[in-house]
Length: 467
Ligand SMILES: *Cc1c(COP(=O)(O)O)cnc(C)c1O
Image (cartoon, rainbow, N blue to C red; front, top):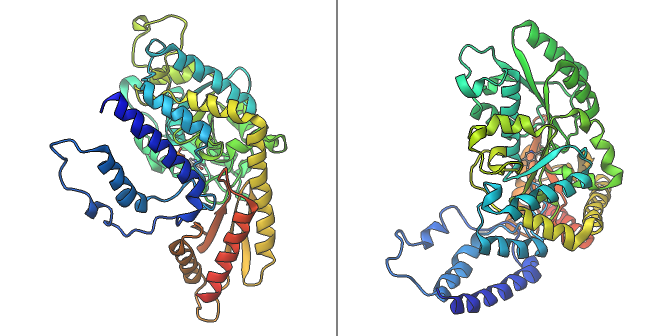
């Protein structure tokens, strides 16, 4: 493709994208295709001769689009959001054009220096101590994996990287049952074994019980294990549980155990002064991760990973001896994460933060939290429905009481979610709490309005009645 053709097609794509953004409410939120339906329309082998772009784009519209679940739909209330604002999309166009691999400072000084600066901005916005350092990872899973590796190295006197874990007493990591599955995955990948996760009991709001944490640590030490890490959650995935950071941090310091904080979703809400109290004790932690790609409008992927002492992270992950470093006194981000090559993600952070300003992002998130509370009040007061877990940030869970055609509550709620998602007006997902099927409702799309929330609730009520 020559640049003239590129120009022609790219202008058309921009129009198509703008139309999509304006018309996204017309699509069913969750894709309505059956398994295999998309694959059946694709050729089994690649073409030998190139095809016209019009042909490819035509197939994109007719074959691919029906298989898209619309994360940018304002009535997407499933999982957690993954917002892509116009500012972020414009940055992604430039990132894509430059095609930078920012593995070293030298491979694009602007990529590295912009990342340092924008991470400092994000840190100030969410209340990370000023002397911490930041890096953009692809996902929170990667950041948590890095944290667990760092904790492993610290607990084993920085020798596991060299000699492995042979003859090493098992290391223990402490989380609650609410913690994200990425922690179990990281334990497996780090060679530590998922059986060495010590699940700590929770209080009646499902936050970590710190007395139980202290007892668990004591017990493990007595049995010859090495307590190595604690992962505290601010806004866990299932129902948004919050662990008491400060009380956990005091134990972590006293016991000399690495403390990582997973605030992947709720971390964006820390830009609100009224939510800042959840950050109390952050100075006692070793690392913190949140995903601007969830709730801040900086599109996937963009995960903000902060560390109190960058030397421990670098010491864990560096791949070259000191004397082979290409430039003195600069940051080479290849030593801060799992992969060597890395995208220039900081540009989209810069565009969104400058384009919207803290004020606009605060307003968006504040609205979502307020609407979540209002909707939970409405549902709680509606006959035939009950709130199961109260709103945490912009998430709550509820369930419906079976109507006369049904007996099992779990079956009825599972049927209800299925019916709602098959209709496609809105999109909700489920979780299980104490053996009960419940429906999660998570408000988070940037363009969501109260009308979207209200009309979706009407939709759910009508479907429940007819079930
Ligand atoms: C979404 C989420 C994760 C995983 O995020 P990825 O960036 O997809 O790895 C981890 N922890 C919590 C609490 C989450 O909400």
